[in-house]
Image (cartoon, rainbow over all chains, first blue to last red; front, side):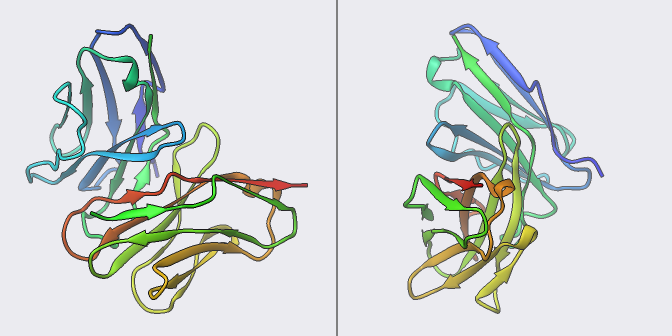
Length: 115
Length: 114
């Protein structure tokens, strides 16, 4: 079946512009996660959605970052007034449950470059 | 909060030799532990997980990992490395109870030398 898809695969934007990154999780997966991967820094948790519950936004680095998940499926991560330090690969993952035993399935990521 | 340490930046191993990638963790209570692999320009792929039961866990592509509670470790192993195993490997942990965050280590680059 189809895996997690993300678009665009690459995004180059000028400092100060807003960007939107999209994630399509695996059909039927109720949990959705966003991470940021910077060179040599591992994966940084950003935000987590589970069903209709309020999202866990505790990993968002600043109020310029926001995310929504419409209809319990597609999610959009928005970064306003981008800064050069926002340059990274943004990864989306989904799992069939939010339970701790369930592995997450990752998309290929969106590479964001802020010039 | 949970955390993972992967002490080596890069692991070099000759093809056919045993491969070990080290991971230690910190978490409140019992852990759920995971290993993921990332090939160039690809997303992370799940390799294996420890939930409960046997301390030795077997996963995809011939990999296994050993959970050691007293040493808070979850080292990844493969008896005979292949050149195609060259990739970035991430260890991750989350608690049995509490938040749903999966904490990742910074990753280990594995280079298998032909």
